[in-house]
Length: 241
Image 1 (cartoon, rainbow, N blue to C red):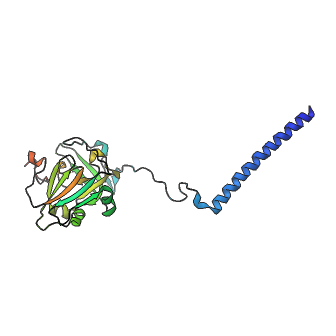
Image 2 (cartoon, rainbow, N blue to C red):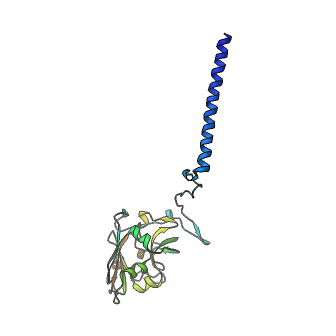
């Protein structure tokens, strides 16, 4: 019986020793990796910050921003769902060179700008939003506008159109937005690009823009303008023609 117990104790001691030796080997290996191969550890904070999903901002430089979820939205043919890989934005009409850009080319090629602009809808609601986008004037400049061009006509994927004097677009740094309140536009709010038509009624804020046409037709009327709304859409004037 004594010999059996001694053998059992010896077996347990050997097992414990083996476990301890294995643990020491793991610790030593970790020390070697940290000191001699530090780049092999791809841990958050070890080689740069780990990116987290963007969050909607509700205040910017002292200005309270409206919640995106509280913005009523409508469209003549319902929400447009556009695949970024298939999307193309053309600039044509009275230009020297028609341009056709992918969504990613627009983001990579042109400077990005942000500004807080309030959207006022003829239905009676408004929303103050931080918009981020590219300037329409930069897109037009690359296409080379004809001297006879005096009007910019915006087209959307659902057939919606609206227009502005060329001077309004260039003098006011009007943006084609791809973000609102630090979030990429969702389909309901115009993804991939929506016009930020500051100082204009909401029906001029065309969504899902896929064409910018330069024209000499200063009297062009868009979708709602043909239905009795003011062509200039100024907030300080009547919303009706």
